[in-house]
Amino acid sequence: MSEILVERPLPGVAVIRLNRPDARNALNQAVREQLAAHFTELSSDGHVRCIVLTGGDQVFAAGADIRDMAERGAMEMFQRQTHRLWAAIAQCPKPVIAAVNGFALGGGCELAMHADLIVAGEGASFGQPEVRVGIMPGAGGTQRLTRAVGKFQAMRMLLTGLPVKAPEALRMGLASEVVADDQVQSRALELAELIAGMPPLAVMQIKEVLLAGQDVSLDTALMLERKAFQLLFDSADQKEGMRAFLEKRKPVYSGS
Image (cartoon, rainbow, N blue to C red; front, side, top):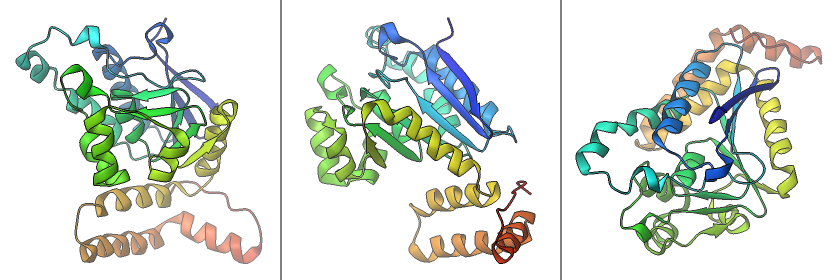
């Protein structure tokens, strides 16, 4: 049985599903490699306009596979070059929605934070418990978490290893929406279908500029926004969108 499943349930929508239920979707090296391969492939697939990332309706991902790391040395961990595998997700130009049921801990929380939107079930838990086994986050947990929730909330989670439930995660800024547990997958697909129906070039430019602008000065970020805004006026979708608005009809976007 494959540890990663890829489905195409709706036009323009792909679902990447972690499939290690017996290990609570723990992220071993093989899973990371498969995730990177699938994200790389879908990033260049013109038929895919939005990606849903999930572990299913029981657990998102309960962390890294401790059995896979317990006796490793520093050079072994270095030679794995796992940052390159995570980069395939972080650099995906298509919007990514994490659909989180159950645990999103350690590497699972880091994986969710690679997404652009997080839809969480009411019973979901987010946490970075690495300190409890003698290490620290190594796939962006200290950096993405701080950018999402601020220094003081991030320090509380990182230094204690304590998880937060979905309602608190929403208040902190670690989730986009919280819905009933049995509605997570359907809500994520609903949002994905909505985004997939938007003009793809505009969607990708919004994502690129928002992410690039986080770590530069406001003036530089505004310049990036302005240039992307102007560039979109050379797209067929801009003409189609505005003409459809004026003609009071539904636009049909081609991604060109």
